[in-house]
Image (cartoon, rainbow, N blue to C red; front, side, top):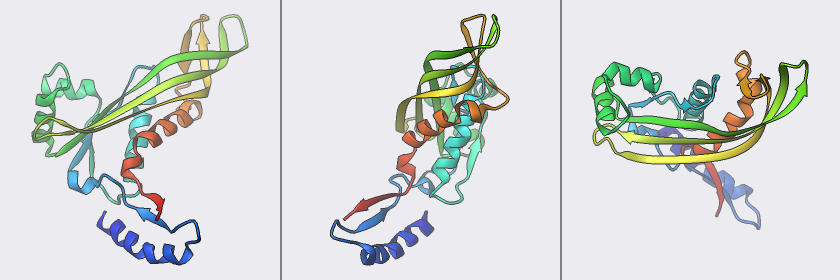
Length: 209
């Protein structure tokens, strides 16, 4: 983050030279500096949908919050079930986060949920029982940062989108299953849109002055 700030300072005079009547466009550092919250950890984002949405959303989230912040150490703790089993706990609560902080030596933990609320198939029949399909999907991603000393949430953000996804199957006329062999092709655009919405405070932006 310190290197980024030096770059911002150097970029301001260049932006001023390139400015026009509409004002000078300057770089604005991320509102949240991850260095202030190290060491960080993340619990795999939970998903209520069958397939690989949770792991994919987790990796895309990590990539996006690091994009403009350099080499940020992030400990991946596994799924919520794995974390709770490891601590003999029943649910994530302030005590759980405090225990994780002590066990792994982390100051801040990310956790979140990805909910696919509606699936509206657009079906192309291939046979009577198995049908190839696309689907319109409403999805919401919610992520929070929790301080492991107090167990209190210090940041949270959610985003919702509706996207048409491909490579889904409809079995028996009712059950929707995403293609696990090519998750990126099936719902990569959906996950990317949600992650972009919830991570903007960790990224560089531009403003006219």
